Length: 308
Image (cartoon, rainbow, N blue to C red; front, side, top):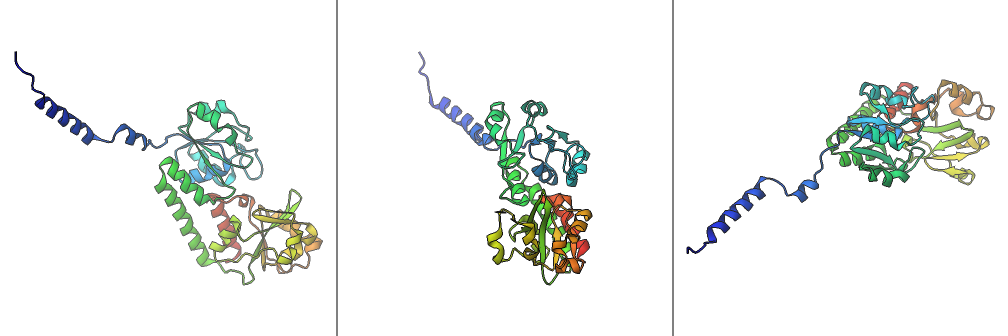
């Protein structure tokens, strides 16, 4: 009987193992590099514009209740036309969450937000149980640029996110070069919005955009801090204290139209305000409530038109 020799067999096995390891990554490494999503859906109209600016493969977005800030579907007017061009469907209307509709569009990535009227984060576990991958962002404490960066990381669209941010920054810089900034700064005012009155803080997204344009934003005078009833990005005060709260040379009205400007200048409590007597009160437009790539550009155009 011939003796079996194992050395050649072991050598062949070693060569096979070497060849396999040289072909590509191990399953574990492959799992760490998931394929880019091809069908992204957004549950937040406030984030949808950011995804569109990034040219993400967006197939559907939740819609809000139609208003003067939206089209007839409930898509925000600043990006509705872009969404229509790219055939973005309504995920569900009026911000009424519908898991069947979400499943129906078959997304491979679903974008959620942590807070706000459009948040459905409470359904995250239910969605993931259906095999739907999710990512959560928070527009209450992050700029649209920060959200774009986060979404770029989650969807493998880092280059597209960076390109959108650079395009916006370049657009801002070109506008800033043509603007004549008021020496006395500006006040950003929420006038009679749902019966409330407020002045923008220097840290608000709107104020940061003004600053990027080289324009100083006047905050609420410290002497009125005790009159503030609520503060987030804007400090809310009574109508009676509004005149004293506005110290900027020019006034820009948040979410406003020309009709709102007329109401402001006709308010007897504001009749002696320098911005009123010198006719330096301007509307920022309905889309200025929340700043994204599209509404930010519209706001830049509005400011530049008034301050050239």
